[in-house]
Length: 262
Image (cartoon, rainbow, N blue to C red; front, side):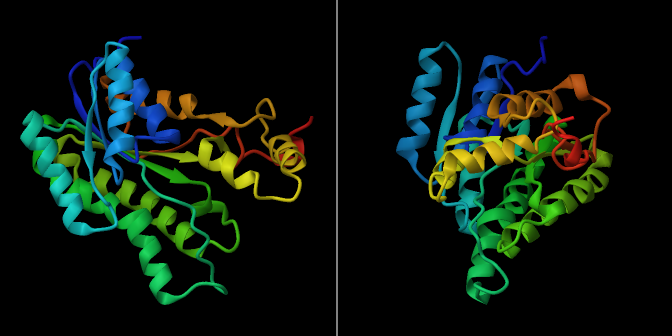
């Protein structure tokens, strides 16, 4: 399917690894120009070089997104390089385990900057260009904003905020024909997830337990499946879809997991 993303400049925060990288690869394959924005330029550029060797386009910008001034600087650098921005994928973040009992005020606020505040700032600074291009925004979110998880108050709050901003921006930006949607991730296999599960006493048993509770096919979601949905939401093929929170999760959040092995 031709998504008509050819030469569209699309910012992808945290695009050098995991789900973000999957999104970058999908966009590049569709002819877009994904711009990886992340804290390590070497990591960003490594993936850009690899994508270019495949015959696609990409660009890298270094930015520590927890710092407001670097969010603004990153957007300005994209505008300077291309003169336009036609899409944004807010993806960067980390389930950092700042809980109610083990957390602090400082840790909670830091986590909100790590997981939510830059979502606002990137769009805020890019908005004049998005208005010109009638661009699209996709916010990557997590099941924790709806289901909770335990011992991760800040991350859950951030994801509740991501979902709320999706609906709020969809309303505020209607007059500009800018569409805003979110993709909610539940159990998705990424290097970060693999690293986490290996810290548990019986990682193989735990993984088996988790996948048994994913209703559709009893398997993890892939980064490619998230990426394909994001590419669709950024494209003209979803031209009348806005304010939606889509769960690409094999039914994990909404289907009765007691039926997973039915």
